[in-house]
Image 1 (cartoon, rainbow, N blue to C red):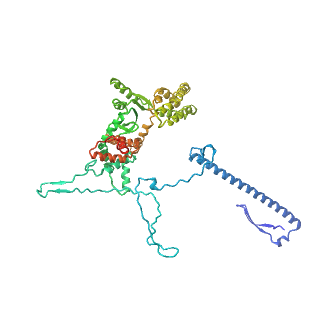
Image 2 (cartoon, rainbow, N blue to C red):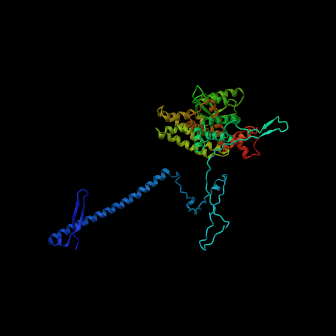
Image 3 (tube, one colour):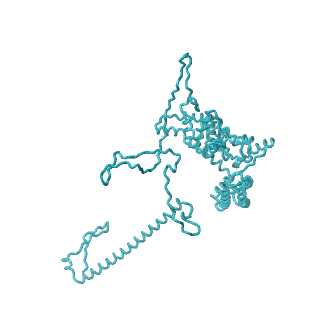
Length: 529
């Protein structure tokens, strides 16, 4: 017989009821017909509860499926945003064959990863000889060790060096006293050693850390009260000391057949009536040379090009370089020297089409796609012999011709003030200079190498705002020239300055980073420095 329940308590706010079974004495009070109807109604309630339970189970199952689907979509989206761009599986092989089981690569020890780092061995032993777990007897050293390695760092230490110069006296006549001479230094009487001056200069002009921050870092390292102004003055001493290498660097630049050029604003905070100065940069594959001037006139470039052996100048389409080429060619023609041809930067043309794509994406996509193929061929020509470079560049000509034809036909369909129209006019107007590199394997496709060399001076300008004197501008030009030349030659600027200063102390001639690289890589073949 089914159990009958009655409502014991009901909460109207929560719509919840408390049931308890009816006692047998209560059941005897109901007649047979009432009980039959009551059981039928209860059966209906039970059926409704079963249906609700089944529906809840279905909803729970659907919720689990939805959760799994959302999780998969999240993984797909995460891989799309943060994953690798290539869709190729890391185990993909040609021919559809299953790859052999890849061997797990052995993790290199720190001493293997960094063979030039100082290796310090540390013995680790028990305080007292251990006791054998088997017999309880005292154990003895076996002579074996279990080795492991980790990388650590020794914080920079600032040390005050007190030099005690010994004096000699004449014990015969007592008429003379001689003192041992001081070792040569960048600045006699300075409070800073050559090593610290080089460290300060490379920290600023190589790592782009302002001198004030250098002093703050030193304070956290235990050397408080280091005056930034005297540290800045020490960089002027270094620049003046190594100016011979800077002058030789100019000689390397003017001797090159292909020359890159670019300029960027340089702020003169004080020390001159004109605050808007410019840092001019000229470079070859192994030398970077900077000059700081209070003008953007092309006279700066023409002053360098007139007596240079340059035959090709690579730059943007700034009129100052056009003027410099014209003025230099007039002087060179009078002296019977070959004229300079102006080669324009294709990276600028491509950049203008990308900017025009914001409003006219369909039209810009054609030019961007053409340039994409041009640069793909240029990547293939990298480090190839001249004949292969020339052949690959001949394949680029149809792309340039199609871009020129498309620009001439489509430019009238857009407003003359629109970015896409300006980009097409720029390309057609400068087509000859943009395509000069196609028939000469020695010419670059763009001026990106020089623009990369200007990056650090630009970041430095944003970090320390500018220079406070003409001397500071000259120091920046000298030290940036030597540091960026070191980077071109893939040598350590600190090691270069250390060896250059030591050589100058010995009375030897200054040498450029390219000469230094030849000296340390092929000492027998390098010229005597």
